[in-house]
Length: 430
Image 1 (cartoon, rainbow, N blue to C red):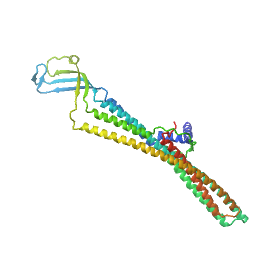
Image 2: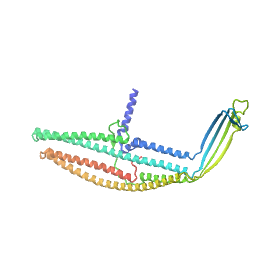
Image 3: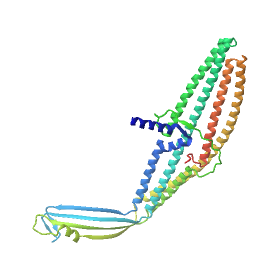
């Protein structure tokens, strides 16, 4: 009983969770569950480890070591510095540390490059997230379009069923012929077929939306979508994420070039440590100091400072600098290309939005005209002055006009969203 209650609560919670979702709810869900976004988060974490590795190159390197040696045959006695044939045991222990002091700022520039690369990956993930969001937006409004067509076909079927009933009554009264009844039955059968077709397209649209969001395919077949109010506020332009990503690529190339040039500089490092040892000759009556006393007596400390000058490494440094310089020029050109392409996309989005607005207004006028014409044809059919074919033709023209108007309305909304995105507005409202 308790288990059934828990299952019922889970089902109820899931239903409430998916029962109603706005467009922004779908976008937030896709950001958290879409596979492309999840992979990008893992990629960001990987770039974070690169930053940690760059930091570790500037930290001290501390190591502990030990070694042991058991000698047989002729060996040098450290007490007399002469050869003997006795077995000896020697152990060594130590701790040493090394610290890079100067390396031509290679490590510092590598760290800056790694941090820039991580930030660039975050922006790149944002761009991919926007691509996923645009796919969700299109899928969301595709569902809205299919729902409108299903609703329209139901209305048309109900209207044609009323006309069929009226025609059958007219046959009984002698005002309609059997051919009229047969034609109206064919019209209603066509409506039923089209309704089933639109319902199947709606189911596929829901499936496509769930797939783009990263939602379970085997869950509820439909989601109660709430279409948002169209945003008509003034657009405030801001820097686009694509430009930010291209600028970060240039900055990272600058750091890589500096790091490559740093390989020409001398390197300075500090080292130090402590060491001790233990020695004993085996199979002899000689008395040796204990391990603890030798540990203390043989203890030594050392510190050193080393400097190295690069003279020739097979022109490897020269080629690294040349490669980094080419990469910098390439990224600078890509930045210019991105700015140019974004300006073009913004201009195209503005033209698309303007034209879709005009087309939507024309589509509304067409629907009004077709509705007037259909009402006139239907009235003439009721009076016996027009045929079923005339009524069916007028009905199809009206259905086509309504479908076209709905398509233009949705396209106008998507064009508006695209224009705002090109001008730097975020797709997801946090």
